[in-house]
Structures are given as C-alpha cells and as structure tokens.
Length: 309
Image 1: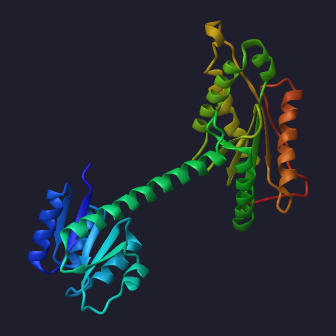
Image 2: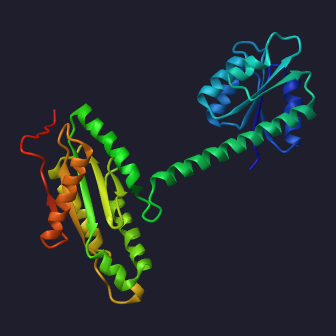
Image 3: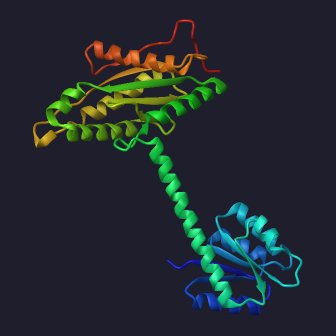
C-alpha cells in the first residue's frame, strides 16, 4: 500500500513540484495551500507524513505541527528558509520528526522522508510487540482467559471501585468436576481441549463488564462488578447449560459430559482480598461436598451489608 504524504505550502510552485516529485518517487502525494486546509484534509483521510512550510498566512507550520501531534498519529517534517528565525530544537520540541531548509533539495528531502517513515514503521512494530507482550503477561495461553496474576490486580481495582461508588461486587469460583480422572483416562491433550472449550463457554456467558480468569489448573474465577450474590447465582446456570450442551468425544469415542462445581459470594466492605477469595472457595467446596455440578452461595458475615444507594 502506498504511503500517504501531504505537502503544505502557500507557494503553489513549491506544492506542485514537491507533489510531482513525491508521486514519481512512489508515494501517494496530496497538497494543501494552508494549515487550515491541511487539517480539513486529514480529518477526512489521515496521512503518514506531513511536510509543511513554517511561514504561512493564518496558522503557521509550527502551530499546525503542534495541533497534528496532539490529535493524530502523523509524523511531520517542517521546512523553513535559512534566514527564518526558527530553530531545529523548537520544531522538535513541539513534535516535528525532522527539519529541512529551503531551497529544498529533493534528493535530501527524499532521504529524510524515508528515514522518518522507517522510524515510524519501527515505532509501530515496537508498540505492537509491547501490546502483545502485555497481553501475554496477563493472559492464560491455553484458555485465552486472564491469568491468576492479573486476577488479583483486577480484583483490587474492582474492590476499590465498589467502595467508591457503593456498588455490590460478586465473585464466582468454578472447578471442573473429576478433571484429574478425565486427564488420567483420556490424556492431557484431551484435557486441554476441555479447558479451551470451557474458556469459550465462560466468555460467551458473561456481560462486557465481567471478567474471567484461569485461577489454577482446573479452577476459574469470575469477577462480577455491580452485582450482588443473588444476581450472580443467576449467571452461573448459563455456564452449566453451556457445558451440558457441549459434550466431549475424547478419541472419537462416546460423548462425555463435563460438569463444574460453582461457588458464589459477595464482597463485604473493608474485608481483605484473601478473605473474599477464600469465601468463594468455600462456597465452591460446598458444591463439591453436596454432590458436584451444583451452585452454592456463601454470604458474608451477618453484620456485613452492602446496599445500593
């Protein structure tokens, strides 16, 4: 795809010659006679690089550069005459990527433009890599749910928000029933298929504001903001129904139904995180002890109430 360059200069001869040269050099080149016209153009179709004169009627090139760098992901090369009272440092300070003097030598401009575009590409690749690394750091590679490290960080955020806005906060802990037996019987590759599918079912069962995590080997947690324990109990059956509708056929054999034991509780203001999580864990074990494939809710202490304002 051609890279897009916008030439901004109030001298028509310069605009025409530079645009023609850039077009012959393989770029999609456009032109604007003023900073105001340039802003109108990029509001409709952003470009990769703007090459702008500094001295122009109305908004000058440095003001244009400042505006562009605040509002767009666009690099700017500024042009000025040798006698003009503007410095390289001033242009760079407001965000310009490079600075060239008039009269413009097209070969030099082309070299500077290619350098700016190369740095732009490297910066974009670096950002994408950092975003991927950040995602990997908080995501379980198998289920694509968040991992337990991120769970505790996010739970603290949600607790703080709950206290600030006086909204209830529910926590759900889920454990796959007899998962060790399944792994021992069919192998870990088949077990991984179960974990992957459960991750999909959990994600499809939640609201946008909820977040799900792989807490341990076969344990999962779900944070439900602005949700009471009673409301959270009504969410859990959706997950169980999704599992019931998705039997597994390990090794191509007869279908095997997987179930989960689920525990639900609600945050008690001012309690510490570990108490909150442990209560959800106890609720989940109540489901185990009562026959598995169940949903159990364990309230906070009797003197702990959290009413909506």
